[in-house]
Length: 429
Ligand SMILES: [Zn+2]
Image 1: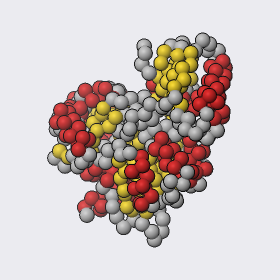
Image 2: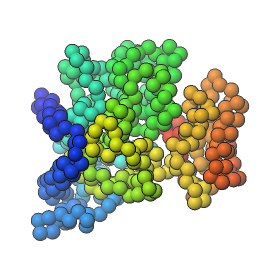
Image 3: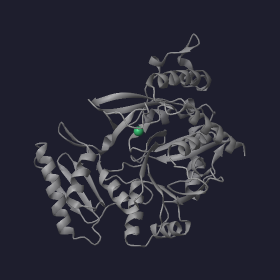
Image 4: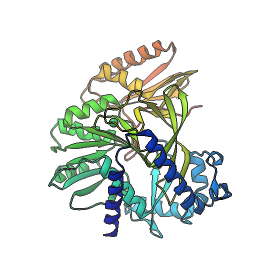
């Protein structure tokens, strides 16, 4: 019961604060919470405590870190005295047994594999879980009056983080994406969800089965997370489900953003300070400091996602920064000499020639080589590959890139349960 009360408490705090229509008020809020975070949390971290000089943390002197450094310094960074070795052992055991109640001294331990396939460990306390849940409930899930909302959540691991909310208002059902898709679909049919939350590749599978009438559900809301949702897939999902497709920007490091009712992705700057490392005029790598965390501080942590800023203000009126697009991960960008082609651009060009078809992967396998994997199903492979050829060559020509070899494969390589990357660069260098 205490846990539910905590959720209600945090939910009320978020509602009471409102949506920060004033940027100055938002920045004051950030500063106040950053100071409290430094004094109450960073002082307990062996890694960060030495940066306190004369009772004050000098933010400028705190190091910027990457995922690799974060994992390397796991023991010193976390404030719970948890050792990486011990946490990893526990997380791997629960991953194998598919029993996800792994805790050390009341702290949930979770394992994540990012799209890079590198393993990460995360620690979450009960209070942090309550905060996370309150934020999801207040920002993402649209409430319905007088009806319990059934939420189908497709995940690779059922961490306590996600499975904790059952109440009079919500019923969560976890779908293990390591199970065969047929099993998942029949479970989904039986559950009849109001909300379906999954990564885009899983949503696309469900949508395809909806079209062939193998799945008959009528959700009121679709939520996409964990992979980049390309415009063409979003349009296909919308045409299938005929309901809003919400986007959540969530990674191991936290719940970073959500799409408002006008479809703009806003970063949760009332919980996270976002510094920007600019790549181009409107594109940046986010460097995040999550001042809502306590068990495992995330400070000046550089993500390798590339975000594009939305230039015009969003009609919803919030001063939380708007993101035009998540352009994909750094290693999803194709590189030819000094020229970069962003994954989103390629996906849009393919969508133009291939209509609703989307089951493909384009992988840069060499300095001048692309492998195009196509799962053509009922479609004709010859015609599809010709269309792909046309779209890709046209795009390369526009960038004055010549001599690129395209190698076509009849099948999309996908590991069950892993994140699907439509466009990526393999490490041949
Ligand atoms: Zn908005």
